[in-house]
Image (cartoon, rainbow, N blue to C red; front, top):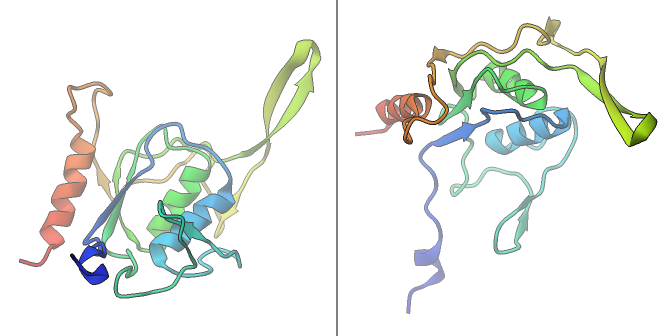
Length: 176
């Protein structure tokens, strides 16, 4: 019979986070994701993030030998479809020096919107607020990757040059 120590998961050497695609959402969630990567309780604001594992365990943030920070040990994959809250995450990731951004410049679509009820049971979603982060606007500009890598075809028999570039860059950092 094996002991609990033998069954404990090994720590990750590196992490690749893929936020390519038409991802939107709440900007507060972007901050929570950065908190998880940094293993800090308040990367943006004073929120507290709870991590729920598949086993139902709940843990707060905090450094431990099993879960060291991912700053410098991760990459973030972005593309021209990455928008909204995902752009805030890409901006914070780059500004916080978490690691390299790989892919293409994000969409530059970072305005907040609101829903309005219309006749005939329709909804209209309209941009209602722009944002500045440290005096910089993302709207219309986007976030530029550190390593530009094109993904020419979305369906290319499983080929993903952006992911391949991330794996190659992280592999070069691995201790021999």
